[in-house]
Image (cartoon, rainbow, N blue to C red; front, top):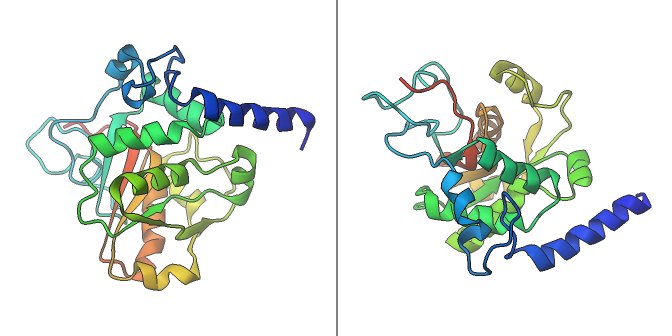
Length: 247
């Protein structure tokens, strides 16, 4: 590790300790220590909450009197349903990018609180599982963003979180790939950790991730978890790409 990388890690640790409640997650302006979610009022209002009638599968907005969006009528996921708080636009995207790529681990507490207050998927859940990342990505980033969200949600809900899955390296970055290409790229990369098979059997499981893009990552995780014969698998994310699902 270079000197610059070491200094960056020290800086980020100091930032975690000093800035976690006083800087807006989005615009970084100063906010009161008792502000909701460490967001200024302007940025909070800009978050595009997913509400109204929702697709019972992917959780996207519906404009017509139907149970599923047109996309989910033609796609099969391995999970039963998904819920997401906000659409992935400039505001939500800024928060997620700063969290994942800016090394700001303290964002996890506030993002998890937003998820807890805006989702109703926690009732009846036995276990929380998070989407794993590869060893190389974990080393590069310094943490797994989904793992931190899951652990904070565990504290808020009282639901146990377990380290159920591992992930191999993928050939290509998922960014910019179609759903079909993403599925091919991810196929066979997730694995249940052997010691967790009995813990998952017959349980209602909630998989946590930061962003729902095409659903391929969450679906592949659910597909692998099904080998342990859980009762039900649902998923939840902070943000969601607005797919062509309005009908």
